[in-house]
Length: 161
Image 1 (cartoon, rainbow, N blue to C red):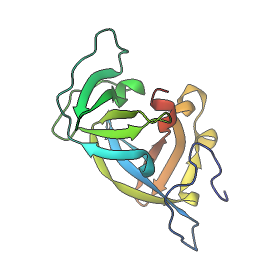
Image 2: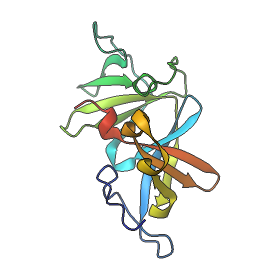
Image 3: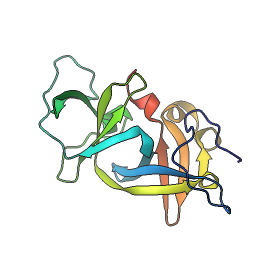
């Protein structure tokens, strides 16, 4: 596959591995029992869900806003955004603080955060090769680690511009 030049992946934190190519780092999390991952460099912080204030007439996927050390953050239910069955917040739920391309910090509600995974370029199969239709717009592809497969999410398509 060579060097990942897909602009949705870009060049991430890498550590050379002569046998498998550069290593890409992703944060793995769970949504509705499925394993997902996002580029680690796109995540600022992981929080336990603070109190969230609903915003009238907002889009269905927007849970509301919360204050994080004085910064007002819009919180998006990632399940709703991706068309997965909505769930209630549990003790394992977390909010991933991500930065949009315009510099706005957005909170993404996920069911559970798992770990940081490191995948070589050969472990990533791009969405165009494995996914079709409307689904591919939110995903980079599939990452395969020993014993697990992860759906690699494209945050730029999920976080509002």
